[in-house]
Image (cartoon, rainbow, N blue to C red):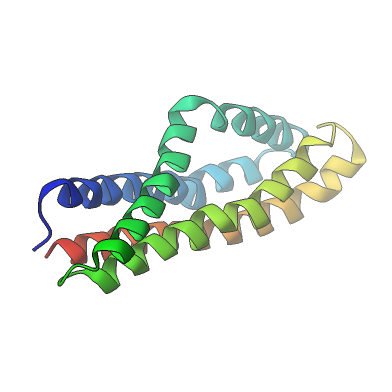
Amino acid sequence: MIDGPYFVLTVLGVLGTGLVAGVFCGFSTFVMRGLAALPPAQGVSAMHAINVTALRPPFMLLFAGSAVLSAVIAVVTFVLWPDEGTAELLIGSGLYLFGVFGLTMVANVPRNEALDRLEPGTPEAAAYWPTYVREWTLWNHVRTVASAAAALAYVLALT
Protein backbone atom coordinates (compact mmCIF):
# COMPACT_ATOMS: atom_id res chain seq x y z
CA MET A 1 0.00 0.00 0.00
CA ILE A 2 1.11 3.56 -0.69
CA ASP A 3 2.21 5.33 2.49
CA GLY A 4 3.90 8.41 3.90
CA PRO A 5 4.13 11.61 1.86
CA TYR A 6 3.22 9.67 -1.29
CA PHE A 7 -0.07 8.68 0.37
CA VAL A 8 -0.79 12.33 1.18
CA LEU A 9 -0.07 13.38 -2.42
CA THR A 10 -2.45 10.72 -3.71
CA VAL A 11 -5.22 11.63 -1.26
CA LEU A 12 -4.84 15.29 -2.28
CA GLY A 13 -5.03 14.11 -5.91
CA VAL A 14 -8.32 12.35 -5.17
CA LEU A 15 -9.72 15.44 -3.49
CA GLY A 16 -8.59 17.91 -6.15
CA THR A 17 -9.67 15.91 -9.18
CA GLY A 18 -12.92 14.93 -7.47
CA LEU A 19 -13.78 18.52 -6.61
CA VAL A 20 -13.03 19.65 -10.16
CA ALA A 21 -15.25 16.84 -11.46
CA GLY A 22 -18.03 18.14 -9.22
CA VAL A 23 -17.69 21.69 -10.53
CA PHE A 24 -17.73 20.49 -14.13
CA CYS A 25 -20.65 18.15 -13.43
CA GLY A 26 -22.65 21.06 -12.05
CA PHE A 27 -21.97 23.04 -15.19
CA SER A 28 -22.89 20.13 -17.46
CA THR A 29 -26.07 19.16 -15.65
CA PHE A 30 -27.70 22.47 -14.74
CA VAL A 31 -25.66 25.66 -15.12
CA MET A 32 -25.29 25.52 -18.91
CA ARG A 33 -28.89 24.33 -19.31
CA GLY A 34 -30.06 27.28 -17.24
CA LEU A 35 -27.96 29.70 -19.25
CA ALA A 36 -29.17 28.19 -22.53
CA ALA A 37 -32.76 28.79 -21.45
CA LEU A 38 -32.12 32.53 -21.16
CA PRO A 39 -32.43 34.93 -24.08
CA PRO A 40 -29.04 35.00 -25.87
CA ALA A 41 -28.05 38.48 -24.64
CA GLN A 42 -28.63 37.43 -21.02
CA GLY A 43 -26.90 34.07 -21.47
CA VAL A 44 -23.85 35.70 -23.07
CA SER A 45 -23.70 38.34 -20.32
CA ALA A 46 -23.94 35.70 -17.61
CA MET A 47 -21.24 33.55 -19.22
CA HIS A 48 -18.98 36.60 -19.52
CA ALA A 49 -19.34 37.11 -15.77
CA ILE A 50 -18.76 33.42 -15.04
CA ASN A 51 -15.60 33.36 -17.17
CA VAL A 52 -14.19 36.35 -15.27
CA THR A 53 -15.04 34.80 -11.92
CA ALA A 54 -13.57 31.42 -12.87
CA LEU A 55 -10.15 33.01 -13.31
CA ARG A 56 -10.00 34.15 -9.69
CA PRO A 57 -7.91 32.29 -7.08
CA PRO A 58 -10.53 30.02 -5.48
CA PHE A 59 -11.24 28.03 -8.64
CA MET A 60 -7.84 28.52 -10.30
CA LEU A 61 -6.02 27.17 -7.22
CA LEU A 62 -8.20 24.06 -7.36
CA PHE A 63 -8.05 23.63 -11.15
CA ALA A 64 -4.39 24.49 -11.78
CA GLY A 65 -3.29 23.11 -8.40
CA SER A 66 -4.77 19.74 -9.33
CA ALA A 67 -2.80 19.85 -12.59
CA VAL A 68 0.44 20.59 -10.73
CA LEU A 69 -0.35 17.87 -8.21
CA SER A 70 -1.10 15.40 -11.01
CA ALA A 71 2.21 16.24 -12.65
CA VAL A 72 4.04 15.77 -9.33
CA ILE A 73 2.32 12.43 -8.78
CA ALA A 74 3.33 11.31 -12.29
CA VAL A 75 6.97 12.37 -11.82
CA VAL A 76 7.23 10.79 -8.37
CA THR A 77 5.65 7.61 -9.73
CA PHE A 78 8.17 7.44 -12.58
CA VAL A 79 11.06 8.07 -10.19
CA LEU A 80 9.99 5.73 -7.39
CA TRP A 81 8.07 3.18 -9.48
CA PRO A 82 6.12 1.80 -6.51
CA ASP A 83 5.25 -1.89 -6.26
CA GLU A 84 1.54 -1.10 -6.08
CA GLY A 85 -0.69 1.43 -7.81
CA THR A 86 1.77 2.51 -10.50
CA ALA A 87 -0.63 2.08 -13.42
CA GLU A 88 -3.50 3.72 -11.56
CA LEU A 89 -1.37 6.71 -10.55
CA LEU A 90 -0.09 7.25 -14.08
CA ILE A 91 -3.57 6.81 -15.57
CA GLY A 92 -5.06 9.25 -13.06
CA SER A 93 -2.37 11.82 -13.79
CA GLY A 94 -2.73 11.41 -17.54
CA LEU A 95 -6.50 11.71 -17.40
CA TYR A 96 -6.32 14.95 -15.48
CA LEU A 97 -3.39 16.49 -17.32
CA PHE A 98 -4.63 15.67 -20.82
CA GLY A 99 -8.36 15.03 -20.43
CA VAL A 100 -9.05 17.97 -18.14
CA PHE A 101 -6.29 20.57 -18.15
CA GLY A 102 -5.13 20.06 -21.74
CA LEU A 103 -8.66 19.77 -23.09
CA THR A 104 -9.62 22.97 -21.30
CA MET A 105 -6.81 24.80 -23.08
CA VAL A 106 -7.64 23.50 -26.57
CA ALA A 107 -11.45 23.25 -26.43
CA ASN A 108 -13.10 25.36 -23.73
CA VAL A 109 -10.76 28.35 -23.44
CA PRO A 110 -10.83 29.18 -27.19
CA ARG A 111 -14.65 29.11 -27.09
CA ASN A 112 -14.65 31.35 -24.02
CA GLU A 113 -12.30 33.79 -25.75
CA ALA A 114 -14.48 33.85 -28.86
CA LEU A 115 -17.56 34.52 -26.74
CA ASP A 116 -15.78 37.22 -24.75
CA ARG A 117 -15.05 39.13 -27.97
CA LEU A 118 -18.80 39.44 -28.65
CA GLU A 119 -21.07 42.10 -27.22
CA PRO A 120 -24.10 40.44 -25.56
CA GLY A 121 -26.88 42.24 -27.45
CA THR A 122 -25.44 41.94 -30.94
CA PRO A 123 -26.74 39.69 -33.72
CA GLU A 124 -23.30 38.00 -33.84
CA ALA A 125 -23.54 37.05 -30.19
CA ALA A 126 -27.10 35.77 -30.61
CA ALA A 127 -26.02 33.67 -33.61
CA TYR A 128 -22.95 32.22 -31.84
CA TRP A 129 -24.63 31.55 -28.47
CA PRO A 130 -26.39 28.23 -29.36
CA THR A 131 -23.21 26.89 -30.98
CA TYR A 132 -21.14 27.98 -27.98
CA VAL A 133 -23.49 26.32 -25.49
CA ARG A 134 -23.62 23.05 -27.46
CA GLU A 135 -19.87 22.77 -28.14
CA TRP A 136 -18.68 24.10 -24.77
CA THR A 137 -21.01 21.75 -22.92
CA LEU A 138 -19.95 18.74 -25.01
CA TRP A 139 -16.30 19.31 -24.14
CA ASN A 140 -17.26 19.99 -20.54
CA HIS A 141 -18.92 16.55 -20.39
CA VAL A 142 -15.58 15.05 -21.46
CA ARG A 143 -13.73 17.06 -18.81
CA THR A 144 -16.23 15.91 -16.18
CA VAL A 145 -15.73 12.24 -17.03
CA ALA A 146 -11.93 12.61 -17.27
CA SER A 147 -11.69 14.34 -13.89
CA ALA A 148 -13.97 11.82 -12.19
CA ALA A 149 -12.01 8.97 -13.77
CA ALA A 150 -8.76 10.53 -12.55
CA ALA A 151 -10.14 10.67 -9.02
CA LEU A 152 -11.24 7.03 -9.30
CA ALA A 153 -7.82 5.97 -10.57
CA TYR A 154 -6.15 7.68 -7.62
CA VAL A 155 -8.57 5.97 -5.23
CA LEU A 156 -7.79 2.61 -6.82
CA ALA A 157 -4.08 3.29 -6.37
CA LEU A 158 -4.70 3.62 -2.64
CA THR A 159 -6.45 0.25 -2.33
